[in-house]
Length: 449
Image (cartoon, rainbow, N blue to C red; front, side, top):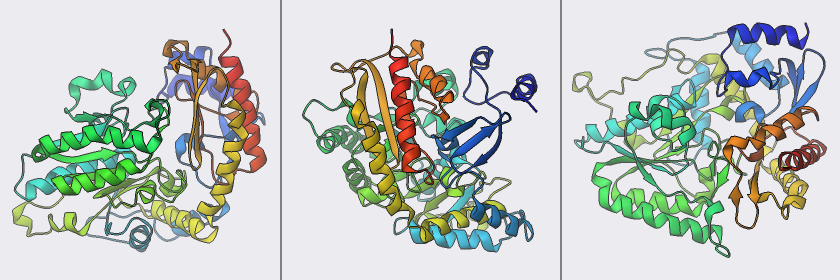
C-alpha cells in the first residue's frame, strides 16, 4: 500500500480530532504503518521521531517488548469483566502499586476510561462528598487561568483555554478562575518562586471570601500543557494545599499529562511535598497502549460514601470498561519498568541533554522563552523577544515548524507558537540533539517574514 492510497480512504471516512479537516487539502496527512522505539514509519519507509509521545502518552517507545508480553499473557486469561460486584487480580495489584508509589494518603482507586472521564469523576466525588456531609451549598469549583482539563462538558468547564471552551460556553457550568502562577509573566528580575507566591495572593483571597460555596480547586501541577506548556514553581501548590486545608476545600491534582516522570519526579506533586485530595492519572499510566484512567483519593473521602444503600450516599458513577484487565496489565508492566530500569534518574541525564541542545536559542531574536520541567521542554516563538510580543495566532507559524520537521524525520507538533519536546524515555542523546537541530531550523523558517 502507498501512503496516498490510505490517505484517500481516510479522508472519505475519518473525522480527525483537534483538526480543521480542510487543512488536509494542503497539509499532508501521515499514515503510519508501524512503530518501534521512538520511531514511527509510514507505508513508504519514511520514519519520524515521535517527539511528542503521540499526544503525551508514550513513555517507553512503540512496540515495547515487555509491555507487548504483558498484553499477550493477560489476553490468554481475561480480557474484561464488569467491575461492579466482580473483581480481578490485575486491578487489585494495580491499585496496590499505585497506592504505593503516589503521595502518602491516597488509599483508594476509582477507575475510568480516559483523562476527561477521570476529571468528571473527581469533580462529582468532590461535590457529592460535601453533599453527604450536609453541605450542598458547596457546589462551585476554582480553576487557574490558562488551564486545561479535558473535552467532556464538566472537564471543559474546569479549563480556561478559550480556543477549546468558548464555542461551548453556553453548555458549561460557571466556575471561579484565579490568576495563573505561569512564570512566563513574571516581572524582569523577579524569580519564579516570588512570582508564584505573588500570584497565590489572589487565590488565597478567593478562598477566604467564598470557601463556603467551593467544593474544590483543580490544578495541573507545574505545567499547563495544553495552555502552551506554560510552567510554574512548585511553591504555589505547597501554599495551595495549606490554604485548602485551612478553608475546608478539596484539592484536585490533574496529573494526567504531567504524571509518570514528565516533570522530573514520578509525580509533579512530589516537588511541592503535598498530597491532594484527588489525583487524576491517565496517559502515561498505560505507556501509550490503551485507554485507562484512575482517580486516587483518601480514606476520608471514601468514608463519606460508605453507608447503607438506602441512604443513597453511594457513588453511582460507572463506565463500561472500568478497570479493564488488559489495561491494568499494561499499567502494571509500565510500573515494573519504572521500578526495574531506574527511569526517573536516567531521565535526568536526558533532560540535561535537552537543555544543553537548545541553549543556543536563548538569545534568538524570535525566542521569548525556553522553559523546562524534567522531560518536558518548550520554546516559545515571539515576534519581538525584548517585549515578548507574540506572533498573531492567525499566522500559524508553528505549522511551519511542523512541516519542516516532517522533512527531517521528526514529529514536532507545536502548540500554537510553542515548539516543545515531550519524547518517550527511550530516546537517545543523539536523537535529542537531532530534534534540537530540526527545531532550530524550523524556528528560523517559521520566523522569516
